[in-house]
Length: 215
Image (tube, helix red, strand yellow):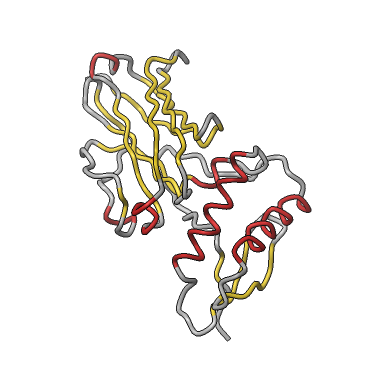
């Protein structure tokens, strides 16, 4: 019998400066109900059967004759999960696969490879050194807005970038997408620990940190 597969589409990563996503406030019964809601919306895929909806809000499924669940099933689950985020009943942090900082300029917007193919991550930077924040969001099947706010070591917000995202059409062929946000060099002046806060449609989706070092 094939082992169960946890369909969170989240990866447990020890990424520099990334706070681990958490399930917020909802009771165990509610989290399980939300997982079952996702399953019921996508249960028409005959090659997949439900094994368990856990108290943490996860789905465990069994694939019939396949090595992994079909991509259309995974995209269906992710789209329903995002609708729960929009309703305010599921934390936006659960649809953010990863977020990290790099000095390498990332090209393109569609993420096709393994996470090992991402630009090299970094935790510490020199003042006035160019840097980018990269974040990966699950397939949502629709349009939404991301906002990246940059906070200096004093706690002041010094920069904000909002971008409209579109996961419809051909974008639906892929499981996740990345975007990037940079801080203008003129703002990279204060040494210390900086915070970046990511929002998805106005919902807090994660806080990430990096360190600027004086030369």
